[in-house]
Figure 1 (tube, helix red, strand yellow):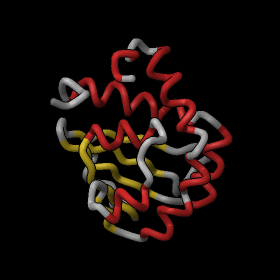
Figure 2 (figure 1 turned 180 degrees about the vertical axis):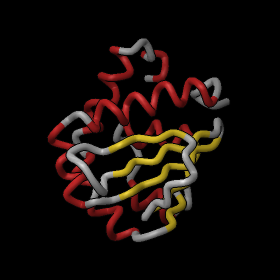
Figure 3 (figure 1 turned 90 degrees about the vertical axis):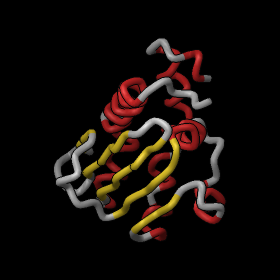
Figure 4 (figure 1 turned 90 degrees about the horizontal axis):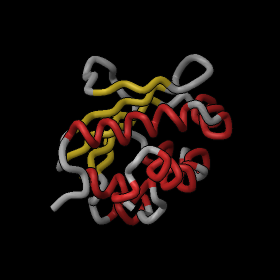
Length: 136
């Protein structure tokens, strides 16, 4: 049994969360300075989210857009993603155990960790504020 009932719920939760953190200057400015383009491929349920930090003043977030070619691509199930944003998944360990599979530069991905660390405290607040307390 997965936490998210379907792809629609997963999209509502994660897409809007990514929009929220892309508006947070403490996170967005660091992501933009790294000029990364990331694609998250989620399963159980399925969803693809791409974050383009390569141009502009804030990251752009796209859902199920396969036309954009990411620099770094990650595959994981939605429950792993949820635990990651709660700060309960060590990225290096998850990659080692293949809970998260990465295509692209792992060192560049790891360089982004300090930029996204504030999101670990934002995610549970965001879930509560948006009626998703049942996911906590």
